[in-house]
Image 1: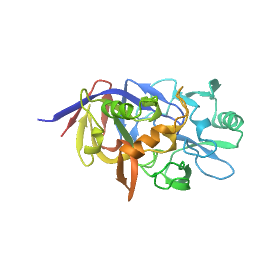
Image 2: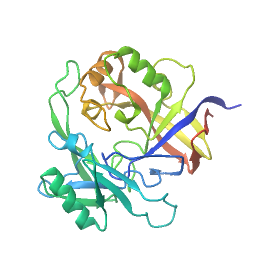
Image 3: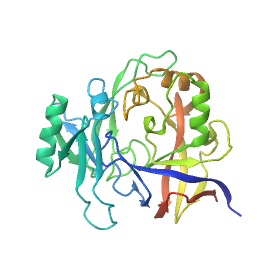
Image 4: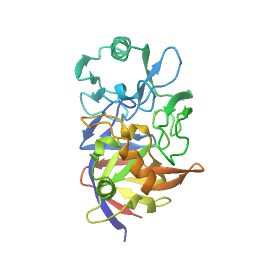
Length: 280
């Protein structure tokens, strides 16, 4: 019999990379993850690099932008129009050019809106000065797509987080405001009374979720995005510092601060809030 680990508490979709996204009730999982997730991004017109919340100068501004589809996407059909807010101001997205112009004005830098495809891209990441954080103080370029073509996800199509890990982190960082919005998972799993960073033990395992099957990969490394003000949360370097001190896991040869776990979709299917997560 499959072992039930928990249930989906929330599903998150982020149509534009590093913008605030939508909490949704149901969706379709495919090989590139949640339908409509991270299918667009901003590219800096001068550097040619994709912009994200990890950017040293513009990251915090981008994290205050919001984007969501005006209706639920349907597999096999064109994506619906996007509704967006830039620094709290609603923007009518009537075309990629007009939207890019509005973003450029809000950021004070020239950008364009691009769709994810098969062409390799690069994005810039800044790593803050925190003791014992690997590559602290460095600015590095990473290739995209690192996950699947057709998505601007960083490493794998899905990032899974549990209520147990959020509670545990909150207990270790009592002065910090620990909220799921700071960590931007694809799926938040309610694991009941489980304790600790439970996802650390899921690497290499396969699970059933709704009508889909997912395979868990590496623990999810955390970066400067967790420390930045976003979604009403204050700037807080203590969040990342606590993970550096309490939950470092091996990732690509480095001992990185982690929270949650990456996953890929082995068998496509529909999922909804309340579905059980069961180890096969």
